[in-house]
Length: 406
Image (cartoon, rainbow, N blue to C red; front, side, top):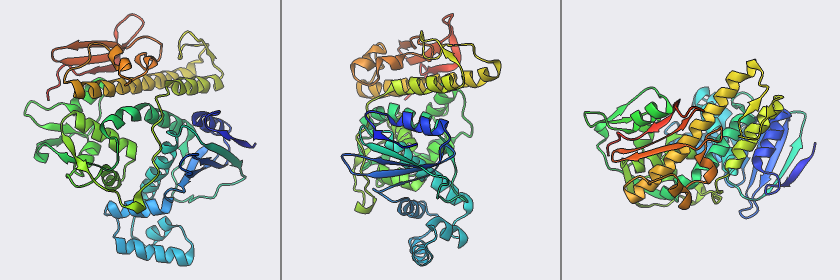
């Protein structure tokens, strides 16, 4: 099968979906028209096992991140690069076999860097693609962590959906942030709750005035020092750029950090950053409906997720899929509400205001069943959620910010 064309004509979600569903093995080559960046994504049996970018090679990226995380020293990296040049072995293998890093360190770092390369291409508006099928795939089989095309699709679409909101607060990775709260006031919580309870619990202050953060949030907060750029914080945490930027976006809205100016990113670390694509909620519905259709289901088009003839064994997975999608939609709308409130000091009078200001599309104000999201605003804050067919709030599908204190 020769699969090639332009991204405008055949979107990336469709490409990944097709390769994943047909369990293809081979290399997908993507070329960005404007920046002339080329990204290669290696598939094995429909799973993503490796990715690389001409803007910044995976091994250069990997070594740099390990140094910035403090896992290895610059001298240790230089020694490993010298060995790599002589032996032609992969850098990760050289570092792991010499004891510089553990196998787990290498696998974790590879997964983050590979997924970051792949997720970035979902923001491309134009470009060309070509898939070359093969009998086998060339990649680091000992350390690569295969990722399903379904996972890539859901995460990639979610990122495209939320990036425009995040970029209103974090327009550049050269932005420098500083902490504005005492780090000793932070309490680290170990478990996440439901969307409503868990999210608000993590963002509100306790009765003693302390600040609750998840372990991942606390790790990012500790890297904010008034000197590091956003890019440096991403590198130092070892997490993906979307996860870190989303956390920093939340910190800005909660007044835990503030802008401290602009820094500079070393030239060797600069990547071509594509302009964020506009929100594409249609991708989400189209992909999920297609996945259900492949399972032999009959879709009723009165709402995106109304399915007839659903086999009993498939119902739990279907319901989980729909609930996850609804939670993701609620979190997307909640971020838009926070962004609007941070500018105007009060919540908007209705969700339609978010549409008028270009923060969300009208379709994003509906749940997975096509019902409008419910929104209540009062003197103490706001609440937004999804309801069932009887008009009652769906369990775990409400974000309540009526008790949030600054």
